[in-house]
Image (cartoon, rainbow over the protein chains, first blue to last red):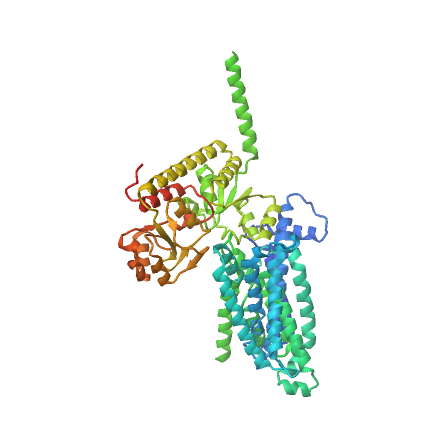
Length: 345
Length: 290
């Protein structure tokens, strides 16, 4: 695979793209705020003294609605793309996707349990109530991934092929249980479940944001340290072993980071497909397979893609809004196909 | 003299209270809930509505208003962009963080129960009437509503003296295909009961059904609610997609009735008594026009 773009150019380009996405995400929305008001409200929020007259509304929309939403989009997009790179590296296959180790299926199962069976948890402490869905989704993702990993281990070795098949089987099993819950659900819970499966950055609030920011920041700091090991793994497991890489440890870390990152992202924003599969692939088409470039570049690209998709989600049907999963697939799939076919010509 | 001072005082009082109320009452309304929007319109507040959710389909003119999407999937900024002073909705309205964001922005948020019973409707109408400054109208509407339901009850008890209560199945479908059967704890079940029939389905909620169990229940009356088609087209599609239905007693006796599916959403709406009457006409032929 040839490198189309030099790493430095790629990083500058992606950083600018990401900054543009952040700015647009803060500046645009169904409520049209004058650019000057947005700027002044932003400056006031970082503590600069500006005349507060008439800025309350702008400050509220910027600080309580758009900023948490933008941060959520950045974290979710970044961590989904990063997990995609980890999975594609682990399975040494560019078609791998974070769902393969069962994290999405498990999260969906956890969410279905919370949404449909939520009322059965009647005796929950008050403070847990609003977070039940997120918590169940997160734990479901972690739990199923842990099972997949256990099933893939034999004699102290992790067999990636077994893990892949175990992931498929458990995802199917989780899917069938979700189906059962769908059957048991009444009309309103059914719609909640459907919408959850399409993802949304709607209703982002700081209290839900912090756990995700913490987890995605740690994953984003940790994984790039393993870039060289991932590069070695591209040659094959035994080859990587001969190069002095502790392959078992690397696999464990990759699976753990993915489960943690995707689990947290899904818990905060519901299922958002496509980003984890396509963003790493796109970056690889542009910059080649070197993980030292691929990992950080995917974070920037994933975050930008998600913010742009969210702009469409909140503006296209305003004052209503589209689930973001629909938008990521609608923007991403044609772009992906175009790049694939162009690469072939 | 005494009379004229009284009249003058009364007029002044009316004027003042009217002015005070008008100043405080919210003038820009967003409604998330089909039945609620209908009641707001019925209470004369339609011109105050600046946005409605996707379940608000009646009266027809509401469809021209900006749509804020599905009531459980609202967008804070989207709703704020309509600059509402009040957001009314059922308790299902959400997601919760969005509702609190809207509250923080200074919009009055009023929740109403969607429970399908008269005490709830009474409370809801009083509440809405107060918010719209139309308390008298609300009381009047509720009285009429109660009267209609009372008449309905009398009629059903009367009819049941001479005719047995028919066994009914309610089929909720989309262009005829794979209908769901309404079971216990659904608005459709409540409707059937009030109309004097008994629901043959014993499950809870809306569930798909096998053709065999449908035949074995052998309903005397079929009521269908189609989300895509209406009238003859819906009936034809239903029987075309589910030919087995034509062997039921209901089909043979020609007792297949249509129900507007929007009646089943979000609590008791103003069009309900009328629909109940029509269904009762079908349940107890010959007892109509009392």
